[in-house]
Length: 310
Image (tube, rainbow, N blue to C red; front, top):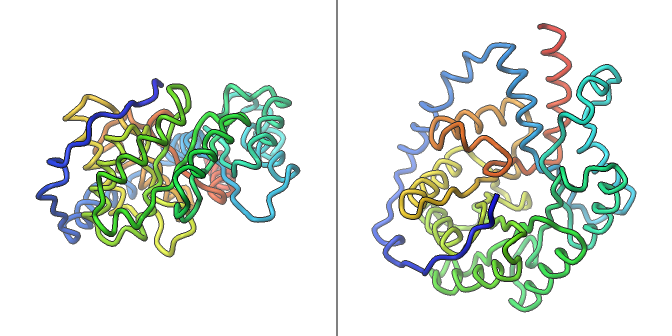
């Protein structure tokens, strides 16, 4: 996947934006509910494996150490503890990425190198004053450069929500452009909107458009630290922004729900909504990810349960 590049800021794309929340909720229900009920066991197994392949396995704890990052990387590479499943899937199925703090990127790079997976599993790092984003711009840019220097191939920036809440869209655009430039043309940038702190659905849509104009490769719902994280209605609003941006530019921008996606059923609802709106072509790691720490536990549980039934 070629990294996105910024396009000129266009304030017209932020004018006359309206979001009917009740209509959004009804649309989500129409898009997902009936289809989820009709999922067969064979389809459930396929969804389970695909959810695994779309996951950024994450640890963002204050007590992270090199040893638990190494364990995270091993599980990302070899997700099944059952020996029969492990042997059958070895080397074929793994997560899309691991996601860690900048100070733990070198640990992840070392662990994945030892596993022979450094070029197959991406190393994502949260940066830019995660989770608040309320730090001077230069220190946030230094954090990006540091993470990349340690081996990060993807940077999950977090936007300054104060710029969203006060409508300073040009300033937000300029900051993300600077972050895009710090990432260069080979490291992918995911812009975390922290939707639970953006105030309104209109602000979520506008922040999505600004992030994409500024060169983000993905727009991501949440840090996972807010009171409200990834929800399907918020996801649909962000999808509508992605669709609009694609019509305007021909560029395909990815989506990453993070926080609150804990079960395979949660993941299936998201995958169905993506397929029914953006299309099957978006259901690949280059354009869709789950940011999760606990999802893999349910993936493994469902994989064993469904495999026994088939």
